[in-house]
Every structure is written in C-alpha cells, then in structure tokens.
Length: 217
Length: 217
DNA sequence: ATATTTTTTTAGACAAGCCTAAATTTTATA
DNA sequence: TATAAAATTTAGGCTTGTCTAAAAAAATAT
Ligand SMILES: [Mn+2]
Ligand SMILES: [Mn+2]
Ligand SMILES: [Mn+2]
Ligand SMILES: [Mn+2]
Image 1: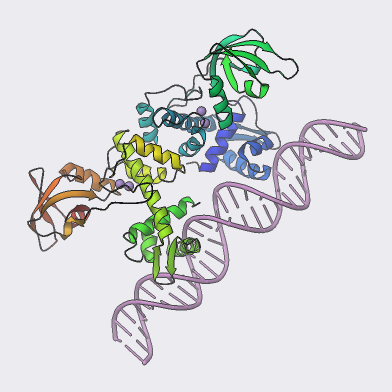
Image 2: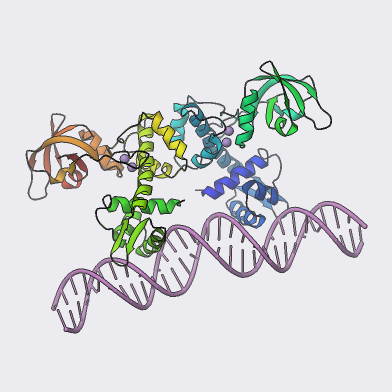
C-alpha cells in the first residue's frame, strides 16, 4: 500500500528515467517534485527499502520491475481520468492534468476497471499519451520530438506534453493536436525555430514549442 | 483550505449534530471517526481556532455557519460522486460509499459543477439522501425512521442509511428502496420488530433494520 | 454532601513528509 | 594531482495527525 507521496515520487522517477532507460539524479527529482534534495534522499530510502526502486548512493535511482508496475498503474489512472474529464465532462485538454493529479490516487481497482469500460477502453489520452492496460502493458508508437526532425519532414502528430496549460492552449490554437498531419518547411539555424504546415496553414514555432510535440518517425 | 482530516471531522460533526440541532460530544466523535478521544480534542481545537465549529470545553462542539457550509460542500461532492458511480459506472448502491469517501476530497469547483451537469442536476443520491446545491442549500423532506411509526402506518421510503454494505444488500433484497410504498402491519412489543408490506410481499424486519429506513411522515 | 465513576483534557511521544544547515562525496578545474 | 565547485547525504528540527497514560472536570451514586 503506497502513500500519495510515494506514488508521486515513483511516477516521477518512472517518467524521468524514460521507462527505466536511464538513472535519475537526486536534484532532477527534487526539481520535478518541487521539493529539496534532502527530502528526496529521505523518500528514496523508503522506496528503496520497499524494493520499488534501486538506489546507489550518490549515483541516482531507477525503478525496479515492481516499482515500474506500480508507476504504470498510477499513470493508467491518470490518463483514464483525463480522458473521462475531456470526453464526458467537456473539459478542454489544458484543464485536466491538475485534476487528474488528484484523481490518480483514488484507490479502487473496480472503479478504474469500470471507468475504462465506460470510456470504451481508450488506448490514448487527450494528449496522445498511451494508456497502459490493467496489467501495465503499454504500446508506445515510434516517435520523435519535432525539434529533432529535418527540413522537409512530413508526418503525423502522435502526442504533446500535457503539463503546461498555456502550452496546450497555444498548441490547440495552431492546430497542433494528436492525429494531425504536419510538415516542416524550414528550420532557422540560429534558434532552431521551425516553419511548419498544419491544417494547410503555415506557422512558425520556437524550439521551446517544437520539443513538446511528438511526431511519427 | 481544509485538509482531508479536517474535512472528515467537520462532516462527522455536521452529521452527528443533526444539521446543527444538537451538540456533539468528544466520545461520540471519537467513535464515529474510529480514533481516540485525545485525538478528537486536538482536532476540535484546530477547527475551533478556524471558526468552523464552536467548542465549549467538556460540553461538546457544533458547526458554525461557516463550518456547516463547508461540511455541506463535502456532502454535496460525496452524494454527486455516489450518483455518478451508480448511474454511469453501474455500481450497486452498496459499493459506492467507500469510494465516495475518497472522491469527496478532490479539490476542483469546476469539476463538481461539470459532474452535476453531466448527471442532470440530481436532487437525491442513490440512497435517497438529498444533494445540497452549489450554495449548500438542501431540501429535506419531512421524514421519520421506520422504527418510530405505529402499526397501520402507510407511506413511502424516502431514504436509507448508506454506510453499511451488508445492510444495503439486504434492503435491496427485500425491496426497501427510496420511492417504494411501505406499510406496517404489526409491531412486536418485545423486540420492536415489524411486519411490513413491500412490493405486495410481507416481510419481517428487526428494529436494527427499521431504524435505518427513513419514511414519509 | 461526599465519594466514586465516567468523560474529557493535557502531557509527552511517534511516524510521515517536509525543511535548513552542515558534512561528505563526487566531479571539474587548474 | 591537488584544489575548488557541485551534488548528495546526514543531522536536527518542524507540522500534522495519531497514540497512551496521567490529570482534571463533570456526572452519578451513596
Ligand atoms: Mn496529465
Ligand atoms: Mn495526458
Ligand atoms: Mn455515502
Ligand atoms: Mn449516500
């Protein structure tokens, strides 16, 4: 049984590690959790004692198989609730993340099964992020951040980062939503800003924006 | 901004006081919250300092206007979520109370407004309990516990107590649900058990059961 | 009216989760 | 390689919400 704080740390470690691909440093975690390094050290000791993460002093942490499974359950809940909020309650995609941060901690396996069914077993959330199944299985499509493609690129938007409300409102305004076709016409070498085509409209986006748009490879 | 624990105490005080009608004693509160009297004393000092309750040492507590308002907001959320769980997710009425105990603490005024709208602005929850409106206004129908009516009584079930899952399953089995017509044929003086008619069927219920059924006066 | 019982409050302690400041370890630099 | 800088951990402390045991107040019984 994990506390709310433990679930949040575990989720952050999972995300920062890129699904376990790389270790997470204490300060990274402190930044992402808006806490201090000392608090992080306290918590990673607890999670390590529960064998949810591996911890090598001074060298960072990563999720164990058990920890990854728990993190994915929380992420599943988060994304199902976001889907509910947008599809059933008519929230816009920039409003749902904060509420889902609370709802993801509601403890009831049956609730999440029933919610999944009510939503028609969705596979992606409103931001294009994949929803893990009940066993924590997740299907990740090959994808790349838009700032890493070359001039002339043509593809489709798979997902966008969902945490910043202002970014999401902006992306919606320019039509940068999952499923939309996108082309890169030009890239400015100085600041890596891009000229792109979305919905037959030319738009300029800065690198700060393009790195938050995930597209097909 | 109230903590989860503060909200739960406030709600318990509101309920135990019968909408503010009578004062609540420390031990009553300790029983209902499954804590110890010493813990209750600590918390009522906090709530009293925040002017959510009135507190006279050794003589109990009651909600202030402010405290009652806050309690009713939590109760509103609880009952709307219960309604959602039954009407949209197909839970049975005996399964929803515990989940609603968690969901009632989700903080988002817009969420509860949208949920209310999604549910079609229901006025009662699955157990027949009235749902306070956004301002905390609540319409209570004249009602009396079934154990207090006399032989020959004829009326309608308004609501049932919703906290015990086994009680609710039993009530459903005998057809004792809000809206159903009910008659009292006989009352046994020894144990105050009742012979009643529900759905044209004679049923015997003990006083333990009848006191949990609220009927029209 | 006094003594006993019950209820409530106070005192002191503990775990979770956070903090600041100091100590330690690692990394970067000269 | 020695030193400086940065990152991390440790030490000690704070708040919230809980507990047990002891003290105080109120209610009950004699
Ligand atoms: Mn989100
Ligand atoms: Mn999302
Ligand atoms: Mn309930
Ligand atoms: Mn109810």
